[in-house]
Image (tube, rainbow, N blue to C red; front, side):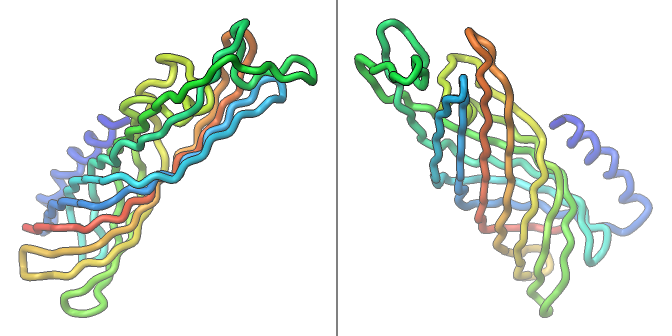
Length: 230
């Protein structure tokens, strides 16, 4: 999907020969808030995990302005690495951490904390709509498709720590944002943007029994923008 996004962008570039267009490049620096909820279920027994973490974020974006109101954009975002951890219980005999035998829960003989880094990147293809409030100030909205990818574990591993199964998963979801810009001169502008990307995934993992897993990961970015148009 990431290569499809870049391919669409490349196909649209020749349109510049049919109309006078303006190009832009942007650097985005800010923070990402990660609202994570993970859930695992086995034989009607459930395990939950939730966290609310903030990381540094970095993004780069290029755009083609078709009119005073509409632009087409492609961007790459690095949302940082969240330092999550989950408790792992050790049983004798070996059993699932949330398993119950009848009405009597198996007591672990020991436990330890397992670090689970959640690092996310996304490549985005979208449309920007903007309108001017004053001569040098404009407001905008963005809507598009984000191809996201976890560089290490996914949130599913926070409630079921199967080694290697949840590494480097990816998918596609809708993102949107709102923001404003201030034009410094003909070439340079600064701005601020708030965006939301919501990831919802579920699957079944078969080992001894069928384990149902799901997670939601809301990525809320607040970023300052330095832009150059030419």
